[in-house]
Length: 137
Image 1: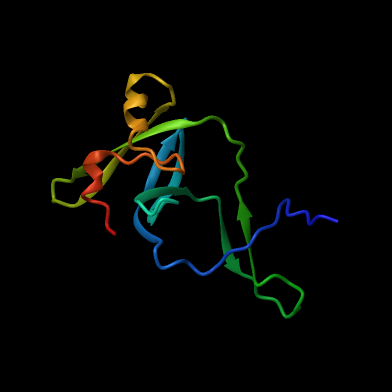
Image 2: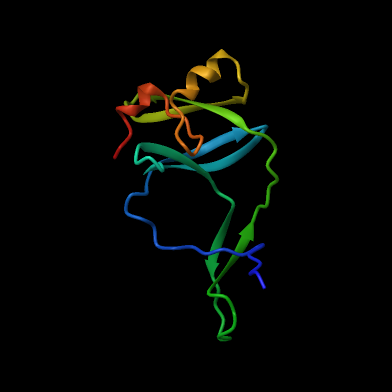
């Protein structure tokens, strides 16, 4: 009998090579989504930035019942709508604080996205050449 892991999973201690480097909000199709940027290495050992969207939250569950969960929360279950292209530009606010400006567009196989394919890693994550010297590894 094969184990059914549908609607199940596990969370582990963060690997040392995973480091949150930016956080903020990205508007996707009119909806603001909380996102963090995490520096890590891809399967080839190359430095990349992965973008993670918040899908829920947990709070400590105060219960005397030892069968109750340690924490409880809510998940926002979304269906994959489509694959999008993302572009990031390093910018500075007037006070000098650095941030990344993010733009999302429909994914296509036109010449611009073909040029970007040269910078894609095995995880289909694209890094802009002008960000490579700023990736904090």
